[in-house]
Length: 230
Ligand SMILES: Nc1ncnc2c1ncn2[C@@H]1O[C@H](COP(=O)(O)OP(=O)(O)OP(=O)(O)O)[C@@H](O)[C@H]1O
Image 1: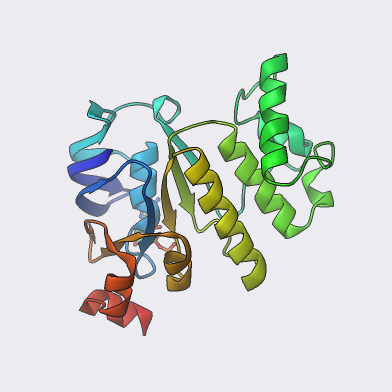
Image 2 (image 1 turned 90 degrees about the horizontal axis):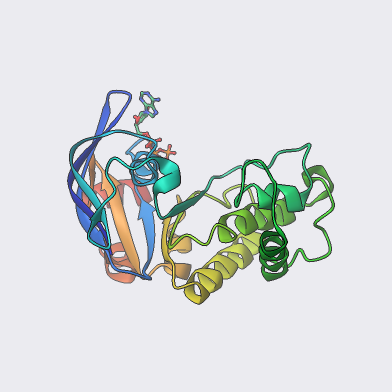
């Protein structure tokens, strides 16, 4: 279980408060107005922003002051952050070892991750020789290969067309289920939440709320969410 125990996060003078828990294996969408602090929330869990009050607990262990690399977290950003001069396999391998000195078992893990995202035959290409959807898959493979129990996705597929985005969301949901991982995904599209998240964390007015059932929240939105949804 992920527990944010009455935390306050400082993102360069912007403060976000949260007092909430996420059950193991849950898929949770993070939604709310632009600038409300959704990325700040994920960044705090990943260890990119200081927590100036409260504690972050994972399975009862205090990880508030762990470095990002020590945390049980893998994060996927919107642009995927693929390095153009490295092959797809190398980009995925970075998820295991930043110096890319992989042993045979680690090379196997890279191949397995590429297989699972449907890029088995494209490992030797450079990212520029992939379509947008394939680049998203490569970035997802790099997250998978880390085998972390907590997956944080910050608007990962916003640049994709609707059909491709739906396909990627379904793939993420299936892979997270298979790995029994806990998934937190920032999205601007309530349909993304309906598609793969059983719960939603609403971030508004400097606060991240306790996860609420997706349909219930979106069908009867509180004022802060109603304004945002329009
Ligand atoms: N490095 C920084 N220094 C100061 N303020 C920052 C910094 N990064 C973000 N902020 C501010 O923190 C607030 C929350 O930003 P954040 O990116 O978490 O919002 P968001 O909900 O993810 O927004 P969006 O949906 O537009 O991506 C914003 O008001 C933003 O201007």
